[in-house]
Length: 509
Image (cartoon, rainbow, N blue to C red; front, side):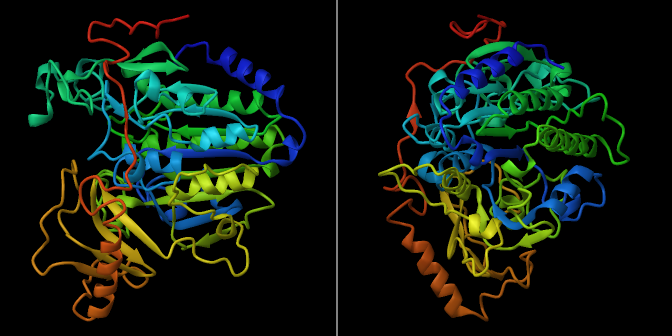
């Protein structure tokens, strides 16, 4: 496990926080959101996996509720922006793809995150894991409402090739000069989205605003255990509550690095090893809640930031990460809160990352931000199985980067410009496939296999009108009038330089 001082810091955060709890703290629920990176829809037992052994997630599903139609975003940064703000990603993070190390832009500090709103309601807050909403000081979790942060501030593949960031466990490490992403690689510079390919610096492990380690192969392999240990410590130290813990794992994003106790233990390779280690981590979190008597006081949500890659299993969905097909955005999600969420139940209502903020803030008795439009809804009636609970969303919009590619209304989903199965970097509207827009009935065809547009011209026309209605707000392509300003800094640079030097102000204190 990566060595560090995080135990002392967590204890201090919770001790100081307890001073301001006031009356009613014991009645307010704790919240834990576990967000896995690139997990496929059918990579875990509750969603049909026959490859990966996930007994803890199986148990979580038996004790809670499956959300079978929970939408994220096609890629990492946008999905996390939606979770943090309760908005469509394009509204608060209008970028074409994801953020990279040393990016000059990030989630604007003026946004009111779920952590800030819960902190205002008296909650202790922690982010333990991958952030990916900006790595400059102004964009870090500690500036966005989190009392405590431990993690890699972006993806685990955004480091140096010779230190293992471009190759999985057991693979030969390529030479640094061999790594590149075509025209995106600029060894001596970067655009405002950050450094790409061979220009990327060493991976930093950050605690609050201090670089406490450099993540090479051994640290990659230990990262799930590192995060899990810190998560358990935070729960124990803050058990007086209320607390909010956001646990966004680096697993199971490439490069694949299952821990030493898990590598080679599954019969299906290192990807399955890592899925099974994530399941172990979930079990550790749930066990800690039981040990501390917090089960009936804690809502736990398990999800993924986007659909799985081609190494994952997304069946029965079509497509993968990077696309607006169901396999790119519909993610396996579980919600558990004994005594409050009915055990062993399922909901196929349209829900998503945009609903996390309004739901948690509502349960906490907090206040939603004034004067800032939200796109999400309070889905507690759906989670609790309340009789007569109405759908949270009449419509849902599928953005890939800055482009609106599909809309959904009820069971109907219209792809406005169908393209490749899995997208890469979204750089604008793709050309429509021959025949124009494609229509699917997701109730009868969850795999989006049969285009029924010709049989339902009235439905096509209605959904086209719904899509066009988004034009004056977020825009159909490019930045619309309803998109808010990105956070932006004048002199961005990585937290660790290529020579290993730590950025001034981020060294050990």
